[in-house]
Length: 345
Image (cartoon, rainbow, N blue to C red; front, side, top):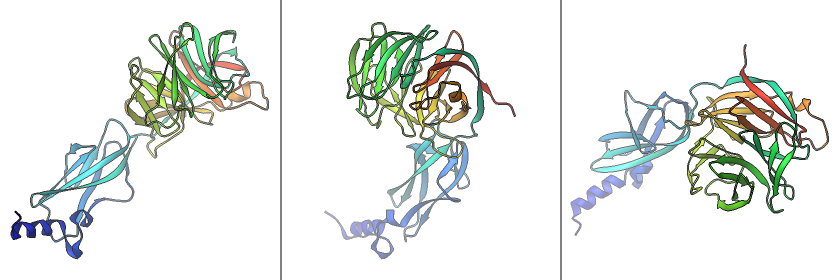
């Protein structure tokens, strides 16, 4: 049974001046303007208290992990960049009042600039609306898009000859692909479904559904995990066996979150991603999501046959033995073998 004293303490804790609850009278506030900082930044943070109840103490957390609070500041240094939840837990008279704000942690340095040199030029199907490229040995796998024209192919990259091909049903718009073990994974754009294939025969062996990711754009893998772009700032991490989304990266520069990653390729801890609708490619740290470089492919489109249905740069594959990248575009009649070079001042 409640005693009058207990009721008084309860009301004193949760009702402040004007009868408002304490969580309405405590406010998490940051030094300066905005709520985005570079990784490793020391950020001034405090809890403003407009109630009549004094605070005993405050502790700070980032995504549930305790932060060291020194001289009114915390250091924001999560491994993965992008959006995080900063929480203050205010303690007063035996009660805890949690206060949360979303903050954005950006890359610690601006992306470096890269250019390219053409090593070789090969024929490419001018009708291919290229969505994904992937090498296994010297065999080039290619996926194409457009409803009624989407396909999965094996291609002789030297001649452009289509060695084998399987078509998608007319309802599907084909997107990116990746090869891991004896499975080839292929996305569709807006149907929320992906397909599994035998890479030797191109026989479809299964399907999988998307989780939180909104669409299917690009795929790549690091030998253990699959990375999937969906047209947002997120690159999703998939378990290759269950195809469940187990987490995500957010692609960020030192200034902002970026949401244009399209076709993907993984090489030595980095994700190379075509920038949607642009003649450029991002280089993304696969651990943090930081955009560490940008490759300018400007001018490459002028090297292909110009026609009314010509579309943008899309498609990137790394040939491990040759140590070079292969890039093309949608309805381009050429496939380019290139080296990516750091741009000199």
